Length: 294
Ligand SMILES: [Cu+2]
Image: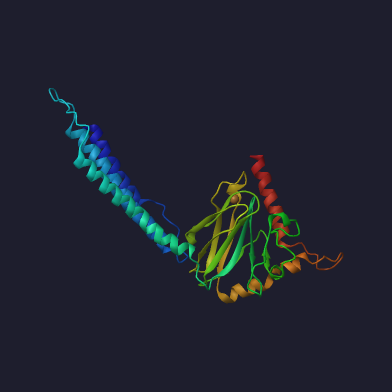
């Protein structure tokens, strides 16, 4: 009797915890409410199955408890029960999988008006590249990565000359415009994840993965790495700022192109102010020293 009661309390407690849970998703800031809906469907199906199975267990523990003189009947096969279990399980699994297939098809079919933004993950920082005036990103190769060319843009490709390079700094995006995020890694597996955008994808060295989304709210959002990528993984944070068109263009105007960054520096020139990137770079090595000290 006590065990049956404990099982019932586990179900009641789990349901209460789910609805009164002090944490929930961060407010959504993209078009991907499909993802939220799919997760809610999953919660409903798995929640109902969990409650049904545990309550059934409670019922059996109580109903078939030990009583003097009662003997269990041996019944290894039941065609009827097997049919029921097969049909109900198949229906449940189908209901779990089918919505995901529809969402996945939307997730990977990028609208034709999406602009491309490249994200480059590296132990342990985020960098970005945006197409310049020609609207095209130049080709790149990890073998071309040097301190002067941190993203490995291939210098002989004319499309890459006007690309805007944002090294280890914040990314800005205009609100309401679909973007296709091209994801690259130049060392190990990383995963670009902004919880509010409800989208993430692994970044695999040697290939380019992607997803797309439309930011729907202006604001500052944190980028997390969602793939364990070494000792600096928890510090691999970044910032995406979703701006109004006007603010976005103002920010874009301040950024440097690949051609500007790779132009030979004149020694003694007044322009030799340390770049933001250098500051971020040293910030990261300082963070890593803290990690190593732990
Ligand atoms: Cu990472």
